[in-house]
Image 1 (cartoon, rainbow, N blue to C red):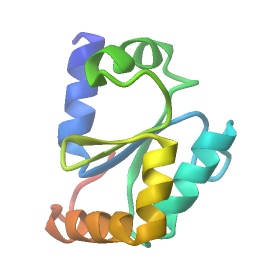
Image 2 (image 1 turned 120 degrees about the vertical axis):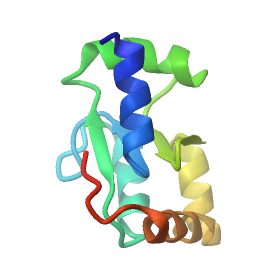
Image 3 (image 1 turned 90 degrees about the vertical axis):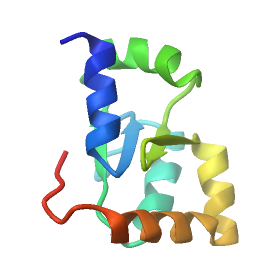
Image 4 (image 1 turned 180 degrees about the vertical axis):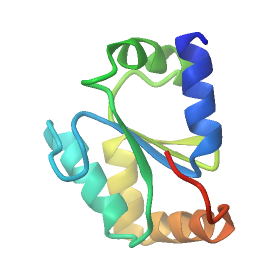
Length: 112
């Protein structure tokens, strides 16, 4: 399976997916920290990929997503955006609405 196929499978399989530097408990950059905090504040489970442990995904995802930076939040197979967009959406309440709707529609057995 190619790296692009892996990315496609991750995006399709996980309703709420965050590509980040580090993990939700131990983010490895300020942008990932702010983004994961915004997503966690929505109160729903989400999958994540630590791109620091996955250099192939780190190299290929910006091309696949047509988005050059990390973190990247994906919901329902669509790129939501990076830190600035996610934080703006969190401030307006738009992020929580999006995350809660996605979580309500996901299959109960879903796991990263």
